Every structure is written in structure tokens, then in C-alpha cells.
Length: 127
Image 1 (tube, rainbow, N blue to C red):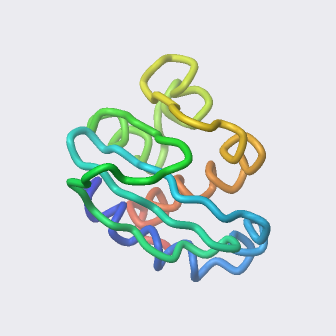
Image 2 (cartoon, helix red, strand yellow):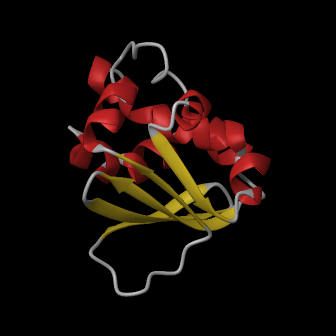
């Protein structure tokens, strides 16, 4: 579930005009770790330009979001339980670790919350 969810992230995000508009001032590369799998996600003007799967040799990223595969699978359920329903809840309970320059993440928090919640719609069978 999690690898396919991340693999379709770019197509799902770029099809949502409202999400692209919300991130129109955002240019960032961030590392998304799902257990042992690492993905480098590049966002330019709100569009997800690339999602590259690691392993990487010294990747350049602004911030990293790291969680176990089980934590992401729970987060991507159509109706996740408490503590897994939101990125900030996962950070608070330490299921999700945020590293690096946090400013772009918090300045565009709603964008990232909605971007990373997109696989929930795919899990429900709607896009």
C-alpha cells in the first residue's frame, strides 16, 4: 500500500488544481521515509515535479518526514484512528519525525497535510 501510495503522489497532487494553487509559492525538495524506503519529493510552484525512490547518496533536501511503514499505512487509511489522523498529531505522539529546516513545512503546513493525505482517497476508491 505505502509504495503505491507514494508512487502515485505526483499524479494525484498535480490533478488537483486547488492543491497546486495552494502551493503556488512553494519550491522545496523533501525526503519522505516510509520505513526503510526513502523518497525524494520535489515540489515546484505547488506541482510535484518528481518522486524519486532511493537509496540515495547524499541527497539534498530541505526537511525530512520519517515514520515507520505501519505508521504511514495507518495514516493513509480512509478513516485513520486518533493520533494518526493528522501530521501534527503524528509528530506530537512521535510516530512521525520532522528533521531539517522546518520553516517551509510550517509555512505551508496545510499544503503538506493535504498532499500527504491524498492516498486516503485512493484507498477509498475515489480520486
